[in-house]
Image (cartoon, rainbow, N blue to C red):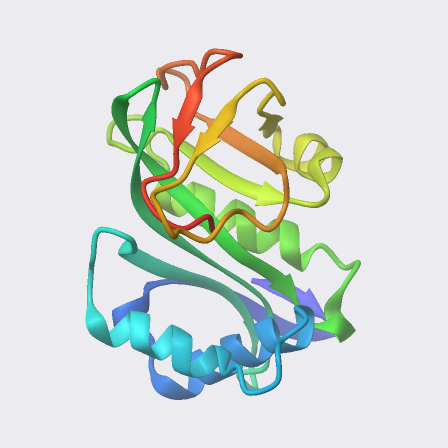
Length: 196
């Protein structure tokens, strides 16, 4: 339980398929308010389609992590899903972190860090796979300082399937538990699908 302007706020970690429509709409509104959105793009429709289509190779076991006030206002949210990537041709299951956002009125209060920390704590376990998360960001120092993530070196090459969407940011971060195999500095990282 967190405090938000004197009110209680709670962290929710749930499979996307189990999230009810009003809460998914609140999360999608947070994403729309936080990210530039092209006219006609409907972030709720996109999230609802992923939620209702079930697991696929691209979005396996998608979860939504969000912080809600008592009135169901979403303060911060992110999504995670499993992805099989390759490191120098060897398949590896990772946790993909995407759509990290705080609502404009809640920025600078620690909710973004709290929701990402909740996602990692919920999804990364020492005794199970995956043991690492990969994500792109425009603020690598922030994630390094707040969560201990490391920036993958620029000597790593990204390999996308034909026609796949590329990462929005060139900074690829990694949060790895002990026991996760290393990623060599000159590795070829196959994304296994669209960048996230």
